[in-house]
Image (cartoon, rainbow, N blue to C red; front, side, top):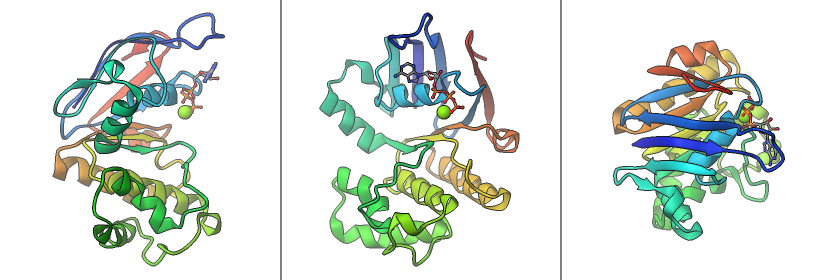
Length: 220
Ligand SMILES: Nc1ncnc2c1ncn2[C@@H]1O[C@H](COP(=O)(O)OP(=O)(O)OP(=O)(O)O)[C@@H](O)[C@H]1O
Ligand SMILES: [Mg+2]
């Protein structure tokens, strides 16, 4: 479902690559925790996998067809991302001018799901993340933890094959964090999707199938 080979990323101003020679396989139905010190490149790696940043070399193959995103142009990459990836950003990226329900429905719009389906699917997912009735509210009126749950609902609503989550429980109290992780795990198991979850929490990492540590020397 996700296959990385010989991946390298170097920022223009940096003396050495952030990472190089990275290899990783995440199977369908598998959830992998990615840990590592702050600044080591975890968010950058997720962004590269999602095609939001370009890697300098190597291949990133995603989805049942194992398409190499590096070989796609920008619009094909965006289409692949819209269909196959659910991304929970470290900083939420909830759009302030859309209601909670409209934010969660954005992936459905991008995937061309008929508008009449949006309300039902959005309400069902809001209920699953403990935010029933929040649909008409504006993001500015939500707490950090509530916004985090909106971001998670948005990443799941189009039933992507690959879930990339950057600190998905970083702003949640331990009980809510546990519930959200359980929801992610349930999706992965039920729908045979893959997930890569960046976390600083040992508790979250220990619930995953495997824990990988990113260091300047690579993934281990
Ligand atoms: N455009 C850029 N130019 C130069 N350096 C950058 C750029 N973007 C990110 N970096 C640097 O790359 C490094 C990796 O950043 P990244 O956000 O991937 O780390 P991280 O492992 O996710 O850290 P954290 O756990 O704090 O979220 C950091 O040192 C950051 O300052
Ligand atoms: Mg980060």
